[in-house]
Length: 339
Ligand code: NAD
Image (tube, rainbow, N blue to C red; front, side, top):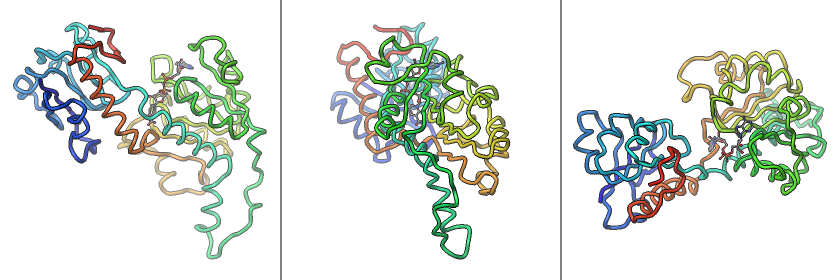
């Protein structure tokens, strides 16, 4: 049997080659590893494959799906699956699966780090003490006020895997945790000891820190818009470690940070990734302009990363392939095909 891993052109997740996948799949299954496959190679490469693993961001088009003649599963090497032609694979009866939970702890840790760094003004103190002057400024009073975490309310939008992990971590620090998620069953708030809001507006109005953990869907695309920001407290902290498309665009962030000089943002994502197009907010952030200061923490979609998380994505993807090729049912199917 033959499996192809198609990784695309971004820095590889498997610098040592597909050893983890080969170990899991065993000697009876050949593994070939590709960057991109050229259109003239579709027939020769894809025809005989029994399974394909494709990394998000690497298109697996309709033509590619149609070139598969015996494949029994296509696995996305990550959460997203919009790079795979879902309709065509459904029509052909090939299940498409994803790996949705590899970085839950890491994203939660990154989120909490952003919350604490902003709330405790860590970057501001670090920079003020060392960067801005000829002498070391050893005065803690310069950035008053700072509020105690037990006096602050965190509003979580989307209480799924990551939202819950964030809630539990921040609860341990003493924050009051409220959440808005219309899709989870009644009573979750009781089992987790959190406060549930049925109106997002109420959460935005009253939270000191808002952290977004929804998927990117038709409903959440552009959810963080002018109105969303205007509903927040002027000195609030907004965290988005979910998806860049949940921001309406970068202009609204720029304008809000400019209009509200105590407002803070922590983001692991950007409306366009990687941000190849120039945007004034990126310039201001890069140039460390004083009016923005430390109020924008921006990371390059790195919240998921740990060596263990990378190993987990790769191992889970290979395990799905092995299950299907051994005659088992696929799991984490995202296109409704469950053969
Ligand atoms: P999940 O599916 O477990 O949870 C998402 C939750 O959002 C669900 O409980 C769902 O009911 C809720 N939800 C959906 N639409 C909503 C809406 N309109 N309003 C409020 N709640 C809504 O997903 P997850 O694994 O927790 O991932 C959360 C987000 O983090 C996703 O966007 C995912 O793509 C992203 N993510 C980011 C990274 C990273 O490196 N930055 C890594 C992994 C996942």
